[in-house]
Length: 210
Length: 337
Image (cartoon, rainbow over all chains, first blue to last red; front, side, top):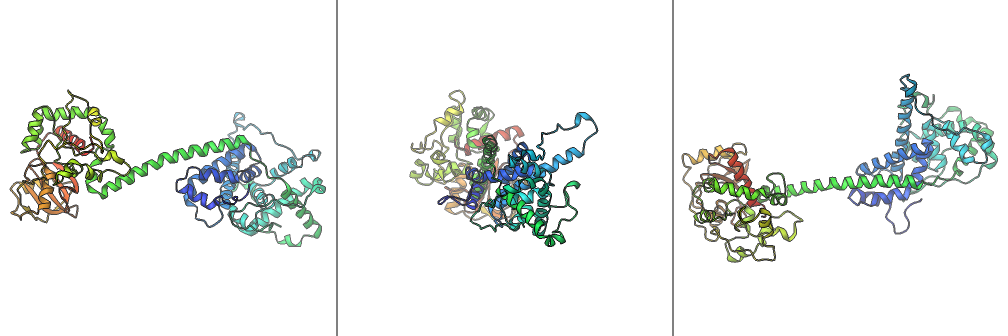
């Protein structure tokens, strides 16, 4: 999961080929970034099934709208934006469905199993993180996923999310503050490494979220 | 992206909190630790099931796109045909020539035309064609088809070689498009089906048979004068406009050039026209050629080998259904049967 290997076409070239009718180009593009896109969808949706739905919807949307890509940003940024929007749209629809309950008990959605924040499960810190992320409003969650978990710069996250950099910083700060109580028991485990963003021949500013 | 969230998604203050830069060092360190911890969480690997599912969805999307891509290709071919006016007639009926060719009913149409007096629709038509019709072989004369005439130019060599016919074929057709001139008799239903007639048509590698009907352009014997009425013929009223010029007869005109003589001969299939009018059609310069039963519009560059046929309409008072049959028959002649 990274940029193109030496000798391989860049993301932009693959996308252009796709637009020109190359039947395999988009598949290669998806294959190249699938794990990172999956991470975005999964972290935002907080549910594998929802993430799969959102990612599939996003990929089909990207497939169809590729000719509208103007090259103003990196292809990965564009793909991430579509995945983020798709994930948030899905959550929004879910939220609307829960709000629009008719009052009939039979219409209540089947509760999904949720992992609670439980310090006793600290042996699996990833579960704690996943559970803690659920506590965040999805916009904050998306900002944290992009900046803190995937290593995008505030500027790139701003482009992906379609908000100002100040808003990204705000969401990240608030999100971290909300996560702190849930993750404090893991403080001793905090490592120093960071995830590295993928590149599409474009250098990404590191950090920036703090 | 903000501003359209469910209410519980919104923070009261979206912008960076004013006091954020005044956090004490400990709080700031704690938040930094959270960020560092989040950064350490490994990127999950996409499950195979999800990858398979999305790949399948993309493959289906790709297949759909490929299906849609075929339509614009066809459309572009149609546009190409519009550029080459002689090809326009290939699109009559909305289907491709291959589709038409496969219609066994085509032979039935020929039979009906013979039975109902095919010669009537070509009043004053070639006597040799009529004799062929009488002998059971419906003539597929070159009276209308620009394409069919392409190979039967003024020289014997062009009459034997279908090279020019290929120039009217839609792109991508390959050698099959280089069909012989449609002077080849079409078997009647009693002798064979239309499909067998199609399969018996010589290929590009087979020399085309010599025309059984007179090769009009080889020895243009038509006599006519060219009028210059200046009329702007219109698609919707072409028939009535031409009829108005036929009755009473049109203006006295000038003597045609050899090229135009060959053109007219090819277009009418031999009979002398009652009208050859240098005018405009839909605003574009064109020749209007008419016999008593039919009118043709061709480009001003019309020659025996390239008639630049734009359109054609029947003029005789044929019943509508018979007129339709004539149109079908004309289509059959313009398609490579």
